[in-house]
Image 1 (cartoon, rainbow over the protein chains, first blue to last red):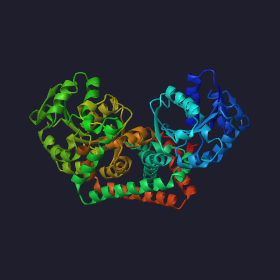
Image 2: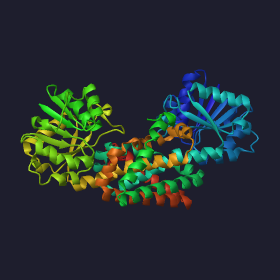
Image 3: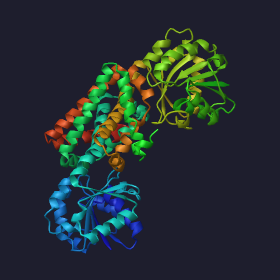
Image 4: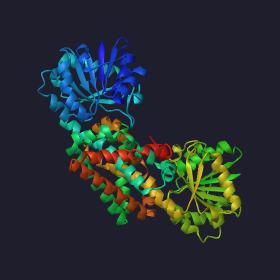
Length: 287
Length: 287
């Protein structure tokens, strides 16, 4: 089987690693505008061969893992070039615009819209990790628009990789992900900014980072080149989450200004239920 | 040597574990208003004996690790009861009020004000971890007010535990820690609140938490009983950090509303330097 990975970074490279392990007879082709990344991917053994769009006709599977603004430009072109039996799926963090841009494409049934909810704050081929996707959720949108046998080809791979599958429409995906992912990134970036702006002595930040700052600010290490287009694609939802987040912070600050420590205690105590949610425990079983 | 731990939770219990390993001939006494915690501490081997204030006269070292509001009440009483050669140190997350409340105490020279910058989101004796403090920073305030030989007794232990020592005045400590620790907790609690309020279906939160939310919201699992008094003690600094954080979030939201994606890219790119800061790399060496 010939698998093409378009964009050999953290997400695409991690797919390549798992496919290499699970399907040893696969030939992995890499396509990337960044020639250095392609060379690294080859050196790291993520791919077997560098390729260009001219070879896409040979593909049985194409995995498109590029920034979402480039995705909406390139995805129709990729679909133009693949053969009728080829599966194309993406890993983009937004889904509405991506689904929109291919909705009337002649090869729409070759495409599966996916968002594997996994990653780290690092990027590039050297950030690729084996088993990145194990136990993680893969959100699939508009599954009914993909040819059944190509759905099956994708789902079989996702299952072998250990992913849990959830189906959602693109609009619901983008709304939920704005809360659970995009807002986390902004809160983290702005936390980093606030601390850097204030703490002229970076040694003080470093020395005190063990106090919870390090993990809370981790996402502020993320790639601006990847995240700017995500916020652009999902602008409306992200603005809404930000408004609510700022409102909650203001209310907390007012409680503090008014010395309402019972109120502050209650806010934190109510939010502690995130423990059970993240443990996947139904709330009627909570302590 | 007799070491008394007043408050046998995460912080005090972790001290007990390291002392047990490093000073095997020590007898460890536990004092706690929570009888269950004392029993647990005994069962877990954190302490050798349960005790009360009536035995504090036997102590060579007293470690006071209780919520900061209880600390300001209890610390003078503890100092009243210890002998002239006993070292008392605390682990409180604020320092100004704690130092203030003992400044004129007859046994001020027996006290060392300390803040070991370490912890997890868990609490209680079962949360105690060996080597929690290794490689972590311990901030010591007003060291000159502690008797020299007692400073030495404390520093020898801290060094053996692998802590890095920094000296700071209480006011500077409380200001820095508001940025680097207290703000992180509030940003995390309010992130959790925003997501819980919006996502009626907790399964959606759980399924999407791999997207960065889980680590960013980790601190929202923290104990309200511990954190409410910290925010109360450090109210002025915390309000200031919150105002700046909210301001930064609002500016980011405005950039997004105005479709200023160059501005958004720049904000994130500038904040990426947190990578080097957290790696402890001087900025003139940054990539």
